[in-house]
Length: 380
Image (cartoon, rainbow, N blue to C red; front, side, top):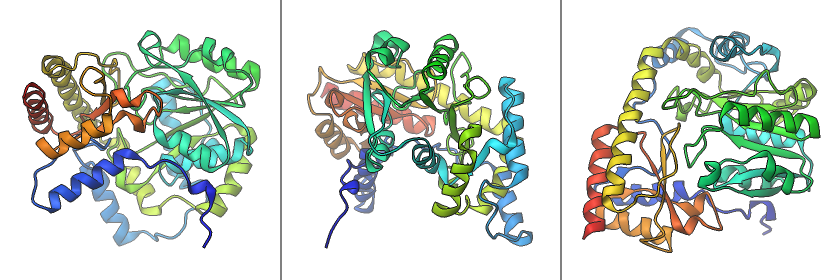
């Protein structure tokens, strides 16, 4: 039987490592999970309570395609309160995870054969969703000199493109685009008619400077965010997008036909997430402690070349002096120590053999023990 060519995309290697780690655990081995970007603290108490109340009292049928009006209004207020940006609730769409936001964004704004620029290394689902839709990723090679972020000069050198995808803070590097550079990219895209997609899913998780948004700055941009990372609601599969006026109706039609609506109970529960700031900021304080621990211990273990982790909860490490095969490196690390980390090929097919990513979203005890095992393994 036929299998569609659009399905011939690379796997998400972080999930492949998770599968191997779970297999090890099922066989009785211990595992320390540093491979997936999932907050270890779990969903806030008030969010779980709101979901329980909804199960008892709410009619949990379909919402309208763009989601519950009260949640859309609350997200619009978030942009006003946090960034001073004016966002109309009519331009906010609740999605089945931020992943669905990218599907809707690409389908509504681009046709088969269009070209979207994005910096590498990058989150692998970006390019894989593009490839599945017949869109051509145009890779902008970044490095430490640009803090692993694209620049206007790179975009100019890339030739004609239809879109630009950016992420700040970024996965896997954790780096952020300074506001002046972010707005320069946004202004350039507006001037040149390039559709900008800004992934802001890690906003709220920063160490020092706060992240800036393009919402309210670039009228043609699509902003993708959600409740998975800062709000610790990964399994609830609830994201959002702030979409430009010219795409509202197109995205509404696509949402109606592809997803109908985001999960009702997740939307009702998410209304409580905005009241959990003390709990959520405490989580970020734990991430900051874990980050400091790894930034101290990894160089002592023999891994000194680390991307600046401005935000998110990842360390992207150059291990070229230790291996030329990051997949094998991660496989042996898991087999020998029980520490699960992700090979860099997930994020960079060309140079990822020399890099690994470590997530520090778990407990401080887990991160400290993982670092101790890595140091002992490398020195052995």
